[in-house]
Image (cartoon, rainbow, N blue to C red; front, top):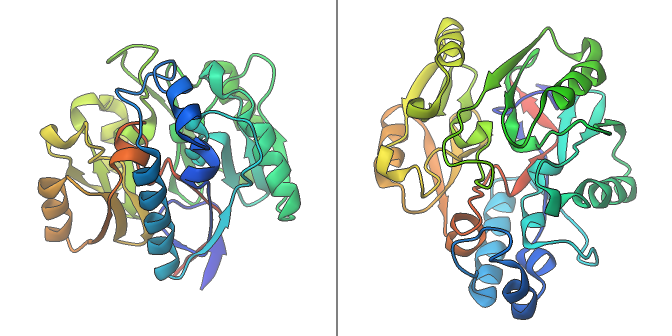
Length: 294
C-alpha cells in the first residue's frame, strides 16, 4: 500500500471534523447567527448534536482516525465545515483565505489545531488571495482541480499553484457559473465528487463543458446526480475508500445510480448539520492521509 495526501478517493486513514456542539455552541448562538449566514432556517441544536455524533461514529466504524477541532474558538456556525479552511498535499497543509468574510478567522483556528496535532503547515493563502477548500479536489495524485468562483479568486489560485510547487503536474482551473449569486454556497464540490480514480459523481447541468470533457478524456466515468436531489446535497459525497461513499440521506435516485455502478453507499442523517448549511460530508471533513493500492 502507498500513502498520500494527494487523493480524494484513496482509503482515508485520518480525518479532521468539528462537532456540532463545538461549532453551534448553543441555541442562543444559532439564533444570533443563522439568518446572517444565509441559512434557510435555524438548525435545531439538540438534533444537530445527535446527527454530528452519529456522523463521527460512522466514520470511526469505517476504520478512520477522527481528529476533532477544539470547542473553544469563537467562530460561526459555518466552522463545522472544516474542509473549506485547508488544502492538503504531500508537503503538508496549505491554509486557505476565506471567500466568505464571516469565516475569516477559521484558518487561524485550523492552524492552532494542526500545531497541537504536530501536522505540518507548508503555506497559507494571504493578502488579496481568496480560496476555500470546497473549491479544490484531486483528480489524480498529480492533478488538482480548482474552481474559479465567488469564493476563490485568481490571486488565490496563483498563490496555491506556487505553494504546491513540484507536488503537481497540472492544475485545472474550473470557471464556475453565476448560478444563485455571490451569497450562495457554490463550490467545485457542489458539482463534482470523486468516487474512484475512474469514476466521479457530477451535476453536469452546472458543470463547465471543458472540465467535463477533461474528465471524460481521462477515462473517468460520470454518474449524474438526479436533478431533484441537487438541493439535498446529492452531489456532495465523501469517498472514504475507492467506490465507498458517505452521503446524506434523502437522495434515493442518486444512491441507486451509484449502487448500480458498484459503489457502496453509507448514509447519515444530516438535515441540521448538512442540508440547512448546504454542506455535505465533504464539507464536514478535512481528510488528511489516505492509502492507495498500487
